[in-house]
Image 1 (cartoon, helix red, strand yellow):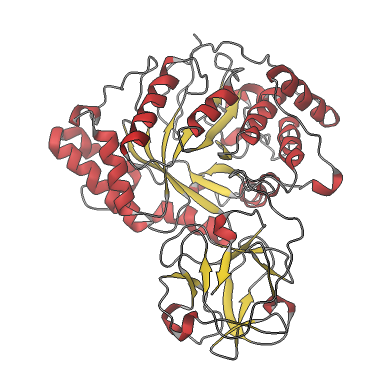
Image 2 (image 1 turned 60 degrees about the vertical axis):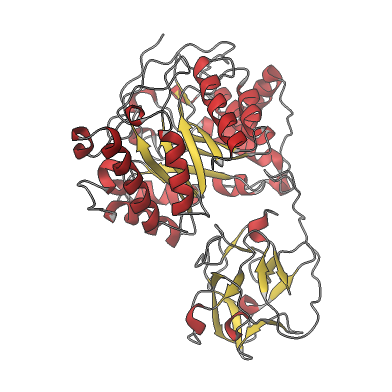
Length: 504
């Protein structure tokens, strides 16, 4: 077995990773013009379905390329590096999902009992959402990076402290995040439970954590996250699988499994990786690759792990653990997609080619996205705009008439601030003379109300497939989450339920 360096200031020390069977051989990085060949070679070796991108399907950034199939491509971000212009420019340009490296972990968010500190977590959240990027929460219950005061308690006292911590942190971020890693790294390599202080509170601690999390925020995806669960035949993978299987059979709320996907010299891309993803997905959960890094940025391994995700409809996204090699907890292994100077590496191109090979038609929920949705003509009169995923209405908060007020989801109640009229000039008006307005045309642009002015940012196509697209931007009304107060934004159309609405 090959030892793995500690994730200093990133994650806990990780146990030595086993040498997985059927690992894909590592190669020297290819030149950019050979990246597609590396993708094809990997696909052939694993039996994966492979498509070469066409020019009209190609996106130029990782996030945009992933969004073509309704997925995300994200990165882990450290608040202390956001002042580095190269770092923040790459992060804001390339990725559409952000995870805080350390800023939302228990030792940071609750340094003393009942006293919460969200300053650094909020810094990352605000930075991301101001750019239209979504955020994953990481993590709520873990044997490492615990508040120091947890070390002095045990049993029912520690159990209550965990419950209170989950409620406090999730209450602060309620309705704001895409997902939470509720529990992190709770298994040993043989598939048994890790003997942590949390395990010492009772074998049901993970179940209690997930039930507490669901009550704290009904709208966010709840995930279990771990490393060394990529190989389907490995004991740890099977241990986690059995837990998820049990949870789903008994109605314990769990929505996804995060596979950290740290591939080192001794823990490379296994040939059965796609089998692992599809097997977890078959239990009725989403899967995500949550902390990806690969020794020497192997183009074949990066292409292979991306292709495996693309081939599994419920694989919803990929996150690399850091922006540049110099930011990585494994910086001496050059494991990321950008070098220390912020330059794209060959592995970047291998990943982008795979993401673009999907084109704009597939979605991770198995549906399809029409490249040119057909506008329909709603019948006259004021109507509610109801989200297909949430069942809630597009709402002007507090019945405001102020220009620039962002619209949100809220329980439908039939009052005037939820009554929208589709006009012959393709406006959606509220209060008779105020228009639904896009504050910009890019991903994440705010959708607000503004005095009607006849410009294209106030014109909308209400399409037969349930989407509402901006005439100026071509992007869809989008909402991440289902809870009251979720803000509406523009985002690349992907055909998922969070972008479908009905006028009724």
